[in-house]
Image 1 (cartoon, rainbow, N blue to C red):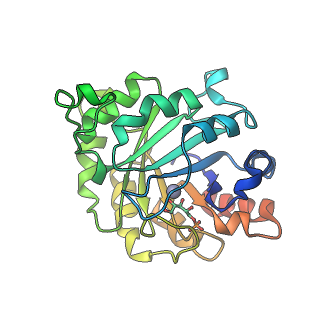
Image 2 (cartoon, protein in one colour; image 1 turned 120 degrees about the vertical axis):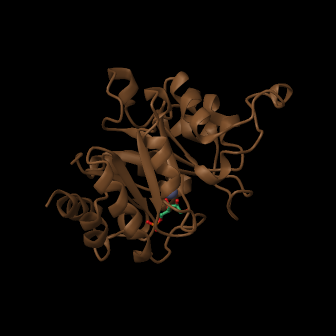
Length: 248
Ligand code: DX5
Ligand code: ZN
């Protein structure tokens, strides 16, 4: 099975001290930073955009500089936005490493430039290919109501550049931190792990010391935790606990 990857969600960090909080959570044992991008359309909340990502990048060493894709310091950008294709280049330039779009949003006609809109109709497969063509790793996320089957076709694409490097099974409705973990999403993780022993499978929402065992047992290896890490008295201890649960 792939290694445990702990990715604190900076949605629960202090937004007035983001650079400091990002560097600190890396020192406390995080592997990646989970960067939640929300546009007020795909989800009923707004976070931040490329300029903020570029600023926090200067506080965390970029694995792209040492040619280690998905290595320590990976910015795992969870794109909760209605036009995922529109923003790939901007986030790449801002220092993103992994661009994880929502399957549900990948059928729009949004293109890189408004004038090219008519020619560039997006599909999930095409979007994975496009993300790879810009030198980023690609992830595909599904909301709780989306069946897991839609991911099978992508992961099994014949052409390697159309295969995602990670899939994300949401364990809350996207939009806010601090919600309750949905154990009923675990059969999706189990089905994915059974089919794909080496795939990076991420879970996001409501993860913490009280819910990690269920997610780890189902087969998740990339663990997002926002409030459980940033709200803890001892974040290092929480990160270590999450890692141990996945590794055991
Ligand atoms: C929710 C975000 C999550 C969120 C998780 O829409 O995608 O990444 O920050 O927060 P917790 O861990 O507090 O549920
Ligand atoms: Zn997220």
